[in-house]
Length: 335
Image 1 (cartoon, rainbow, N blue to C red):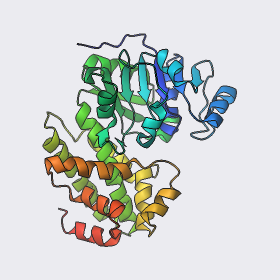
Image 2: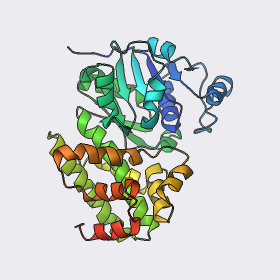
Image 3: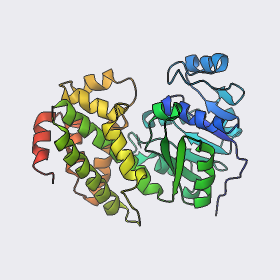
Image 4: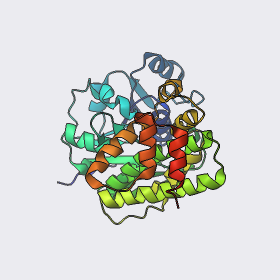
């Protein structure tokens, strides 16, 4: 059965972090009122009273007539036709746990670039299985983009993926502004897994920088990350896709070199000598690549794709391997 999004479909965002805040800012730019599920009491009060998120991107100001922040998840979901998930993947189950309103008549869009920990599933796969939704009523939003630049009007590019190109174009039109360019795709699988893999690779780049490797090596490392990503996508779900375009390669590059990248930051701390636990404790936001490294390794048992970079990151994060020694070993495998 086809699922068509109406041109006047109401949108709601689930989550109150930096990415959720940036997405709400884009949605309200078109003049529409946006439902917004906010679990944090401090953030909820600041949005209602001041039109600002007091914890994330607090320099972003909202027209309070265009946002409807609420801590009632059922009410927010009930009033929307398009539900956009923008909570960290590690907390997705917690965010959705109070939900009693059925999603069967909704179009659900994942703006989460991560894995559901413990389930070894992407967010799209989890929503499909847990809520019994057709893949035809699930979409996703990917980069390359960082919330800090999107919210401040820096020129950015987003990719919207749906099985139906018309649905992708309609959702994309809600996020398009003078500073945000939109591209559309039907490769739900490839774009979601590429977004997950790039977080793992950003950790490897952060480790290399922390260990003192230079730009010449980083160029080779990132080039090999791109090749490894393509190998995994082709080996696990062959399809007609060009992984050199921005939704795949661009998202990888920005996550590897940007100082806004939390995954690169995690790797940097480890490269500087922090233990994995202390590095995670120092992070102020969730580094999705930490959970992704375990999940991708688990999934790859079925596909047996050669992934030396992802394996190196897994060994350091989960087996206590020395980042210095494992990076040195990796240098002999790169071309």
